[in-house]
Image (cartoon, rainbow, N blue to C red; front, side):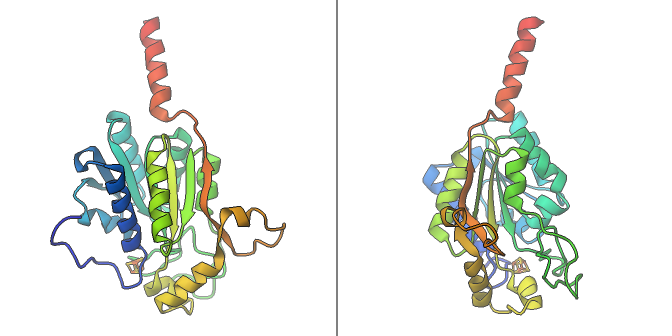
Length: 264
Ligand code: SF4
């Protein structure tokens, strides 16, 4: 954390500070050096996170953080590359880059703070806003269906996929350590309160109400998978959802390059 930057800019009760704290503790426990680590951000409330960091940082354009991060990892494979995005950056405006980063299985860790709306610009509907939710642009309800970010990453080919909520401080740090330690594309979704916009429009103005609402829906993945068909309702699983070891992009590329040299 940069000295002299606190207090941070996020609203009281926002989950971004807790997410960043867990990530910094994970860096420390894994012994990541600032010089060997680059944090890439996009635009929005989560995109401001690099203002507080001493690691290398790249603040990019909206929805393109994963494209920039892919270039960094392809060119400098030894760097630890971490991408911090909101739901807008990752799967709404940035959806195509998200799918292809997971498909390539590029060796980086994407952390998505999913606050279910566009927070910084006034609480507009995003690609993860639930169908019933009111936002500043869906005053009578949202006609669109929401993306399941973890299912999207799994289907597109990510090696590691996990989900947590900001009240799981210790577990969140442990999940981030696992994600950072896996080769290939790792995704951690943090489903987070945004009391300022999402909560205000949906009768959860106070942070405890939003945390209670999240707590009633989050369920350990082991229990979630045992629920009978039709009883999942609006619950979502938390914990490690996918953990596999497919070759990452740079490994595949090195194999092709070696073969090309042999045949030249
Ligand atoms: Fe957090 Fe929402 Fe405030 Fe942005 S607007 S800092 S997401 S609470």
